Image 1 (cartoon, rainbow, N blue to C red):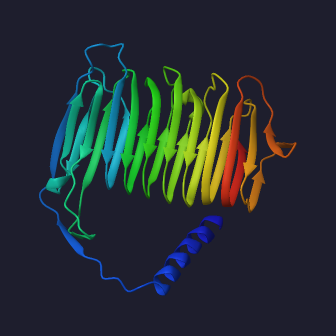
Image 2 (image 1 turned 90 degrees about the vertical axis):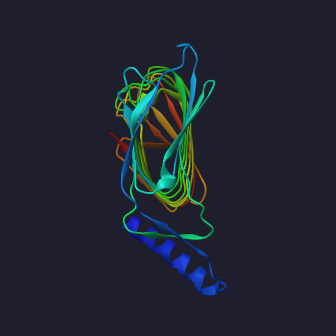
Image 3 (image 1 turned 45 degrees about the vertical axis):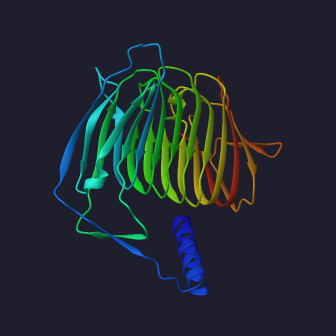
Amino acid sequence: MHRKSILMAIVVLALTTLACGFNFQFPITSIDAGPTVTDELSIPPLDDPETITNLELAFGAGELHLSSGSEDYLITGTATYNVDEFKPEVTVRGDKISISQGETEIDGFPAFSGDIENKWELFLGDDPMHLRIIAGAYKGEIELGGLSLYRLHITDGAAETEVSFSEPNLVEMDELIYETGASSVELNGLGNANFGELIFKSGAGDYTLDFTGELQRDANVEISTGLSNLQIAVPKDTPARVSLEGAMSNVDVGDDWEISAGDYVHPGSGSMLNITIDIGAGNLELRTR
């Protein structure tokens, strides 16, 4: 019910804005689908195994599937597409490696002809790395358990994405940043990410931050979101404190949570989660898993 109300508010706002605005005539760029091509991708690790690789994946619209599983290479996988300009480009400069989607010359709104296909299915090795993912409007399934990530930064547009850590990160992650527009995003197994600081920024949408896994040290979380449905879930034995800022409209608290000095507190022992949430409006659920 809450999700339908938020989505309806967004639609009404957009239609009202259009009705009251000027009658612009936007140029249209036609994009035609061609034959489907699949490129094999394989990038070896750096010569010095102690050097931290800076890996950037720049992906536009389509589907992105990313997981561990590359044994002898830094990254392997395939890119399947049927628009010539979407052919991925690989750039290697010292410890900086990027895989970027080619771009079309678009002067206005794209008008697609036929069924456009663009899908990356990539596998990462456990070499030490800083991982940056830059994406547009896409659907993503990202599994990062068992890797050696010192830093993770994801930026996307209107996305439907699930990021999971099914196994512990092999090193201490200094910083995990996720920035998104109006999206539906699930971050699961965050306790396994072994981060020191997590920053999550978003527009309107539906968001779940699930901190299940083994929290190995105290961690700070900063969440800033707009008109959203936001769910926070922590393991039953993990201590957590949630401080709220902004114009909160509704808070739904699970049975294991308590209120202390204006904050919501989850009892437990061991490493502590300190969570600050700034939400413009919307709904917050605090849960135990």
